[in-house]
Image 1 (cartoon, helix red, strand yellow):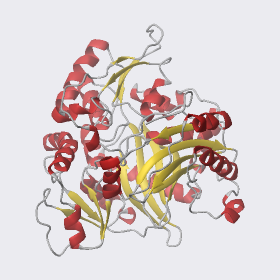
Image 2 (tube, rainbow, N blue to C red):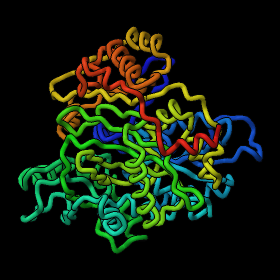
Image 3 (cartoon, rainbow, N blue to C red):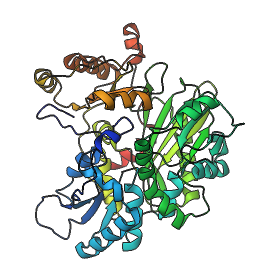
Image 4 (spheres, one colour):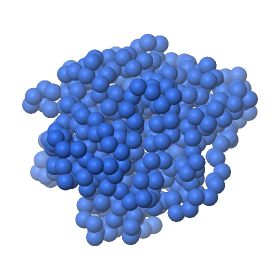
Length: 497
């Protein structure tokens, strides 16, 4: 990963990151812990543990070191040698060690927005220390995708997709008679590297055959969760399984609802729209505010409220991914995540003036998140732009220092991330994911049209094709029609002014 000096940037973890290529050795690596440098501790400056806080969370939490004393723990799955700890990582042992540390350092709270290990670890630590948080069973219920579908079928069947457990282990025979075509995903997601549409049984057989190195990675990503699942929810199927779900047409729009639960009440932070590369299920950009109408956003929040209550999720941030088909009016849940979608925190700051990371630290201490100081909103619309290549032999251009400096000069508010890959790592992206994500840029604008104009200019400065392949140039004026305000936040933001 490279970046322009002075531009806020970080290595981004996600489904396109080459974890296998980053584990060439299995040597010990030190745990990154300790309080972020800050002024002397005071009664009004609580000490909070942030677990597995890398990438977006490192930026978001780091900006709060003046208000909180932050103790970090965990390792970075996408940086060597930090990620070598995966070889012997045990989530229960990690949580017990952090609980002992929390007693010594008198933590006021513990928080994590890390999907793979952090959210569950934070729940375990909070339980042992008697701190605000969710029961570990609630986090397990959300992250075990088969169980989450069962709960959703009970409390919000109209928002569920048909599903079936593929109850076979890695490399075992695939049974006949499955309901195909289907969308296949891991019961416990491992950065979506195994999530894809399947048309027929032969394709599924091919998809579930892994080399020894691949099996090692998958098993070690899932096993820490599986051990806790056996302790807490022993009646559920193994997390080392795949789930078959009802396929949804590729053109069906996707959305993300972020929110939080505090004092028994479910609140919405915002809805972010996903835009795909045409004809694919690869994200091209994320846009905020949403163009969904107020009634549809309210429906999504109602589904979230019912599901979260059913699994006992009572304190913390959540994220709900969902489809909405305007023609049929159908809203269908993709999945629930028991944490904030950290990548969108920057979008909320730009448009709403609400800092989700600051809010989550308040929540971790048992306080109303709305007491977090607001920041100055500086955009009417914001986007996370995702740059991808789809040809396995295509090498995306590398923006040199002059191009990066030009971006910084023309768009000083830009967040710029670059993820170059070559050789086996690049080939693995295309094999597992069907594309290679080589860059991300965050920008804001006065409205959707101004945002698009800035995105086109920023892309040209970097030498990258603009992630607006869904729009023809002549249609830009229509696309840039008045930005739809966030209807779920009208009352709340008014009360804060």
